[in-house]
Image (cartoon, rainbow, N blue to C red):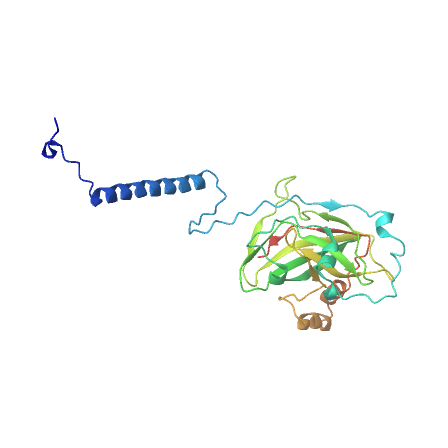
Length: 285
């Protein structure tokens, strides 16, 4: 018996609103899953960068231990090292970065940081001079000539350039020349220099000094941090606490001590085989 169309149940209506609801829910689920995966990737060591909007604090690495180097071998010296050359000798200011770096006998102990003073931020000078039983003493000073604060730390790297154009092969040592507070401890404090601020490192030289007819020091190569191109410093430099009138007046008063010290600092008897010791940077009151 044929059924009458009016006896069949009507099909459920599939409205557009239902389809839109399903689509929106699916999209939201996918979006949440994608966001969660991204967050998980960052938290699990993903190499994708994520900006926090806050600058990370600079971490200053501990400086290396002080170093030393012994007498050079005959092979290092080469032939004719004790005779002046007939060729023109380049001015210290004419040496390029590689030539300056090659002058270093000892490297600086401090690690580079964003706050470290750069060679172009500072000026060097010598202050004071003393003699005792074949030893000479002075103080190597560094002053911040820039318009911003910077730091120095540890023992500077040091080398020498002679007036015959030689790289000096000193017996050299980084050592606390005034003694440490604790036996066996080498203190290397981090020193912050405001513009115009000064730090000092004790300087000693002895042993085979440069006499008449020998090559003498023309310029120090000085490195503040490891890997930094050294600055070349022709002593004595400009001490901001002294001027020419001070030296001249000392001679007029019959007290030649300051003038003699100035002469010594302008013509240091540091030669190719001199023993040179440098202390760590310390604050100057």
